[in-house]
Image 1 (cartoon, rainbow, N blue to C red):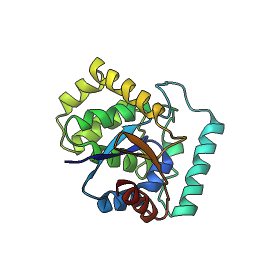
Image 2 (cartoon, rainbow, N blue to C red):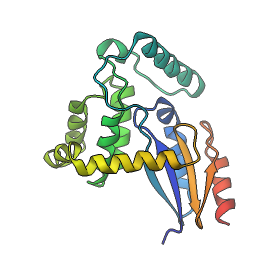
Image 3 (cartoon, rainbow, N blue to C red):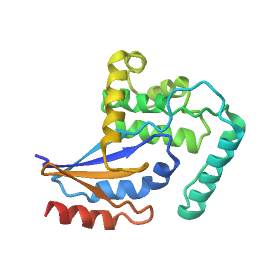
Image 4 (tube, one colour):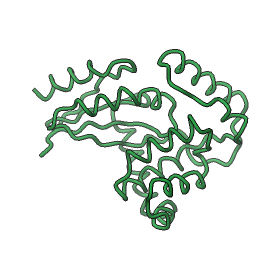
Length: 204
């Protein structure tokens, strides 16, 4: 029985979350058994049909280059030429929740990141998520129905609210809940071991 929960607050379209992915995988594998992990979608940007302004496209493209230089993370920069980018991450967040309901949350997060950052697919488009659900072998009909359901919308709103109630200032962030207290866990993009030391110390 897990008595501590590590909340991982992320957005599937957050480039720093993609950069942190290798260390996050190591960290999860090294966690003590008494700690369970819960993903929390943070919702970087609400639904929008507006084309992302060029200045914003360039700014995000520069972030990608910065992360690439700092961490060696791969990005497909052709995304900007091959798509009509929109500042809209709620569709990707919904997709993660719908996949969670089919026990494929982690697989969907990784699939969205790889589709976006490596294959230059647009994760602001519902078609992308339906395609990924099919590739992951999910029940696509059920997945599609859930994506547009009021039930999922309610869960999304609650999750966004919960993310905003946590003591964080960006994505990704890690918060450990242990014995009714919350602790911010330091996040290192190059080495997960410091975080494991802090968690181990807190849970004693």
